[in-house]
Amino acid sequence: MKFFPALFSLSLALTGFVFLPKVAIAQSNIKINHNQQDKSTYKIQLDNLLKDGYTKLEAKDISGAITNYKQAYQLAQSHKNVFDQSRILAILGRVYDFDGRYADAERAYQEGIKLLQNDQNLSYTSEQQIQHDSLQVDLLTGLGMSYRKISQLTEAANLLKLSVSLTHHLPFPESARLHLESRFELATVYKNERKYKDAITLYQECLKLVRQIGDREKENITLTALANTYLLMGDLKHGREIYSQKNKSLDFSQPVKLSGIDDLESIEATLSNLVSLLEKTIPSLRQTSRELLRMYTLVRVDQRFGVIGQLSETVGLSADLITSLSSTLKQGDILSAFSMMQSLDEVMTKLTAYEKGMDVLMQSVQQHPESYKVLTPEVLREMEEIGHNLEKINQSLRGKSKSATQKTLIDLDKLKKN
Image (cartoon, rainbow, N blue to C red; front, side, top):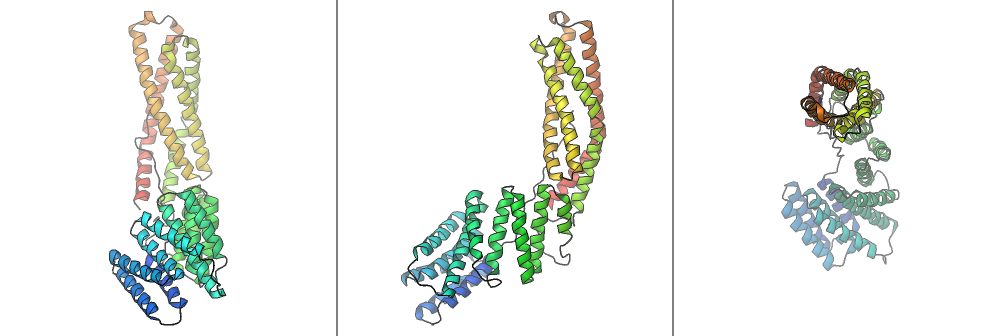
């Protein structure tokens, strides 16, 4: 009775927009340049090292860029310039993160944060305080991003929540990158933790911000992330509405590529057709479950008939799951429906095993009827009748679900490949 040969699995890998390292680094370099107005020898040397590092990064010479940034850090360290040290550590953290060296990124970010925390004796002007807070947000966001990538979600959420709170003190749109990145990263963490409503709130904040600055590409990416989160909640209605707002003229790689929402709607329709077929088996399944239970009551004193009780329970459970699955699909909760499909397949696997056990039991009864004292002619007739009923249901399920199941799997495979 295992009528799902392969199971439905759906992975909406929702990775949001991430500012490229060179964008964050370029902005960091600009702020370093503005930190000192005089062109001292130290400043000239530092600028040259940072520019060379950025040039190498653009040329994809990661190791060369890291060497330059390390030299810049040592120069700032020798001049005891805490702000420049922290800024360069933020840059190094970005480069390490981009290169997949998350442990190195973590150390760089943590050292930068520690330097800022220990630098409490300076009397900042209002402009310097903004630069200090901006750097702190940059470091906290970077560290949170690295923790998210290694699935340390609790640590990531704590850092990113602090980062988002600090952005309220930063001017907008001058610090748009920090406002957007901290919120988008925290939303992604919430999404990974299945805190979908919290994620949606933050994605909506991001959407408002990107529309303020008029960045259509980031608007599309934010809309995609927002729509995908609604889909993960099983809210197809809002998912469709959000997708419809996207600017179709833009061409860039998206986290999940759906042609509008067509692929998902095709899958929903296919699943609905499949469940509609399965619903027709519910009365037979429930009747068979009751008959098995009635028979098991007559023979339960013999433990060898335990498989009949297991079969009765499992047949009833399959009917319950099909009923729940139907209700879930009618509510538009397609993601939960996939999970129920998996549960239903597991139940059908057990049902197949119990059916085999039932066949073995009936063969033994036929070969050695004298050893089964609890059996009466009436019970034997019921066992035979129920066996025929099960076979009919088995054949019905296989015939009705085969083509629909194959189409469903093809549609799901298309979505996963995209």
